[in-house]
Length: 287
Image (cartoon, one colour):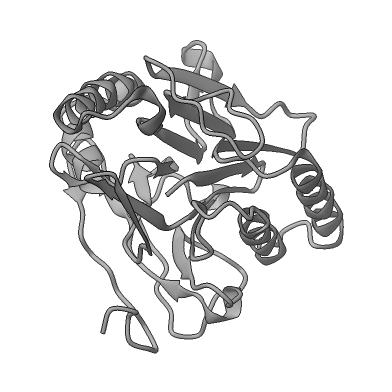
């Protein structure tokens, strides 16, 4: 899992990532395509994905995230993730004898939190954040650092979208091409999302690095439903309008019309959920 893209606009938040797993043991690297959930819904206000370590604290990373964040207030989610992830990865590094280059990890969060400047100025804003020990990477590189950093970006009213990418980056030309396509699509379909989703899938698949997979995890949260924990599940394929959180698995060689839905992990101050995967209309890949 080595590439993740976050998208935010005034209408939709989305996270897309590859599902490649590389396991290194005794100097050998085994690579396979993951088919597991990678999305987490944070307090009904944002969706989060990750790239880097598929396991933290001896368990699936999304489960670890849910367990750790269930212990803290939502206002402390980002700080907690940065500190706890650093300690978990340091433990793995020491136990496995990894050098720094093998410890890259990143979370990307997109959604619509409430910005509280004062009691009179509470408003929900489109925002995107990265929590990573490898920010500042360059094209086709992944350069871990000693500590995690948290970066938050609120989408200004006069801007139409933001993209944040972590991991083995696509080329600048591909990123610009994707942004231009999305802007053109939004002019023709101001309330649409499917074209945007397909552009994010294409952007990840444009990277030819063997460490970036072509099976894609894609999650979307419409601003109109926030805050919400309702999740889409349909046997009819991805259809508009998208009226609730939707999490999809797009297999290699397929587009969104052949995507499968799954349920994300979720965490709120009063509830946490993990492990629900539902495959509708066909058998999951491991059957």
